[in-house]
Image (tube, rainbow, N blue to C red; front, side, top):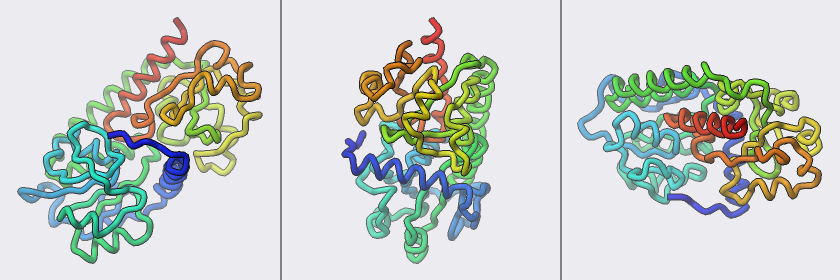
Length: 303
């Protein structure tokens, strides 16, 4: 289920993504196995699960992980943005503005989330509902940690290990063929020119292919998600522009119509390309799909 974006919703999505990225590394771990994860009222065991553990996922990434490790049958409801896999039980629950009563109506034993506006975890805890916080990954290792954690909590540890092994092997194969070596890129989050540097999760994926991020020098604060100026991008003159905002109307044509952008190498050579918004913005099992698509784009640009 794809949710149409109005401009206010688009801005909220971008700001929420940036907020998640900024706060993820600082999330205090109450339980779980990574600094990105916090578990409240933890189950008695993390090596097995109750016969019918009922899970609500308010994170599209967590939803993908749960289904990938074979725990999809335990998921009773997911948020409105969890559009993959197709059989995920999508509801109108919001991951950005979650409501305790709406979530509790599904009688979950476990709620997985990537964002707490301030009172969600406490509210669910007061009802005796276990919560697991899995914020935005800041590294590929965080992906493995979150998959491992959800595997343990759902009784699917072995399945989680198999998924992680597959991701590791596939990424290693891709890194062994750095087809983007010597090429520069700009990763566009939206047309206000927010981007991601090499220090971010998605930036690390691009780096596996040898690509150089033009935004790195602009991130003096080390935030990872700077907003660039048009002038900066014109001066950097990237070889490729990756658009994650194609679903919001951006395209090679709209990029070329920006003042002066028709002179950019990426525009002149036809290397302004859309990338999947979901696989590029989620840090779950489909990271391999994303980077394989980028590799295909690069190989096509060289043909």
